[in-house]
Image (cartoon, rainbow, N blue to C red; front, side, top):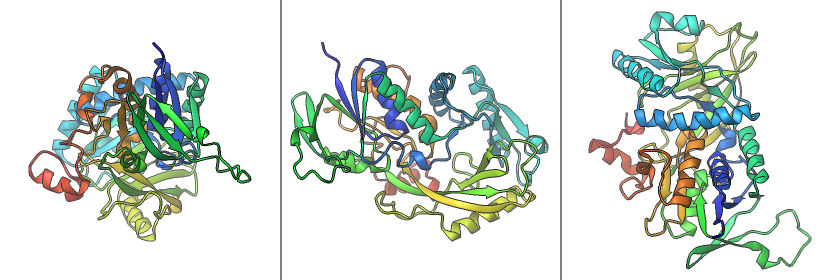
Length: 413
């Protein structure tokens, strides 16, 4: 038996985590990236990693991810443990938070409830008006996604995997037991007029589509239809006249779609990063042609929310901003598995929305399971993440589905 050759399309966090899981289990791996490592959504993320959620399955997924993050941190990946505070506006949300503390504790994670009158002990500049309290995880934090992708890419290469940047898949040919992928030639070698076509063809046994916001385009090359909505989100730097005398944890005002969506965190002394986690886009963005800068209206909206929640930050002023894309599915959970059960060697690993960084380790683990074992054998319950007919529906249809009582739709709230 020879090791299967697997091509992973996309070198963002999901792609490199999948590639690493595959090479660790003995597969031959080639990663194809149309641009450079982490050049898509991953490189524009604010890099937050946390487990302060209320859904047991979502918490379980993060337990798997955090286990890997601890391993990589021990091997040299920088992880900033500033803590994560999710705010509650109602007593019902506090009850959900209390249950989350129990679930996380059973899984070996530290978290605790924070009452409204205790919030300023943790974040002295926060206004507790309209809040019941919060859920705090002291071990959560953030990392640099670009650094993470390149760090893991180093392990992939060290274990024999190949990462080919600036290689876009142009065409696909199926053959019994595998695929032949056609890719573009070397964009740097402009003097060559003749390209050896053999160098542009790659034979493989299986393919993982980890294309992020471009995953639907990749799926189309294989004749498949993948419903992912590239949703534009913006982040901005907040400059302070003087550094705070404490470390600002990640603060999130959103619980299961309820809340302002404001979040902000420490970045460096005298500097925070903030974003609004909810948007009102009426159409998906074109990942090849979208405004990657922060719009003025967004700055105004963000400033108003910040003035409400942290009104007395010392000399706070908005700095540079940028925009990135959340690849969103109809039910806000990632797609991991085959779209077509009759084609088990073509696996999708995409659609993690704003949680791609923190879910990447476990998504890579599940995707590798699908390729090598034909099912997600290492993560209980993760079969539900497969892009089934019921889940792989147009995101614009989620309003109809939500009215049927099966899904929660953030855009309709």
